[in-house]
Image (cartoon, rainbow, N blue to C red; front, side, top):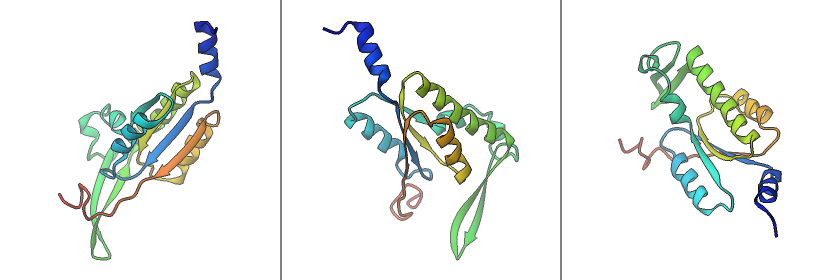
Length: 150
């Protein structure tokens, strides 16, 4: 019979898993994360980029140091260019380090993120080299999505 400390050691010996759901807003990252939590055989924590964005002062939205959205037309189609400044860069870097810290004590994570560059994915790979990491791109046609029907 295993005592509680042996059970703890057994659970801690399992390599944490991280699933990063990468995609634009309203593509279904949160719904997918919640569905995965329900069917997974381990206890995944759901970490949302939106929580970290919510930590920024409201004045940083629309500010060059924070997060700016620029509406453009690309090949006669509406599009948005996202500009992030130094404050936004620190927030997202902090999020990556927070996820790494949580996994370092044995937590498995499902993270929803909007990665803007390959460098961000590379940063995750470096910080999370001690876990079983999967990066999943989520895509949806604009038509029929929350954005396309807004």
